[in-house]
Structures are given as structure tokens and as C-alpha cells.
Amino acid sequence: MNIMYNNKTDLLYLRLDDRKQPVVNKRVTDDVVLDIGENNIIIGVEIMDASKRVNLEHLLPVKYQN
Image (cartoon, rainbow, N blue to C red; front, side):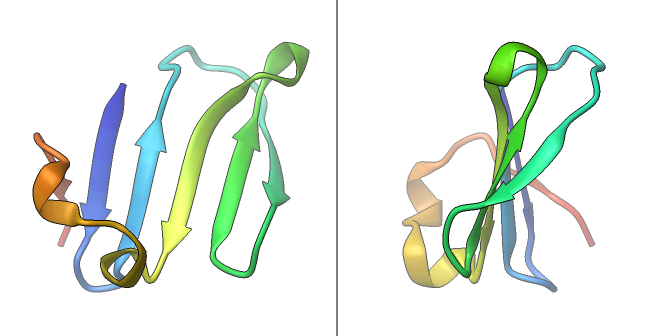
């Protein structure tokens, strides 16, 4: 699993499966998008305005993208 956070856009991305595969994006709320891969398995979660929704200090290690 990879956890990436972009502090400029306040976007948190959790990648659950590192295999390269086609994905379909499914918006579940205004601020959460799921990446659905093969066999309808969730392979990624994108959270917008993440600092307002998640305690980022407890997600380690976090890779920051500038």
C-alpha cells in the first residue's frame, strides 16, 4: 500500500494495489473517489480536502508531492 499526500491541493491518495491495470473512477461523495480495478476490487481511494477529513499525522509514512 502507498500513501501519498499533496499539500498544495490537500489531496490524499491511498493506493491499495500496485499492479498496473485499467481502472474506473467512482465518486462516492463530493470529496471521495474510488479507483475500481479488475473484478470490481477497490485499488485506490482519493480524498479531497484531506486535512479536514483525516488526521494526517497518524498516516505514516506519507510521501509529500510538491
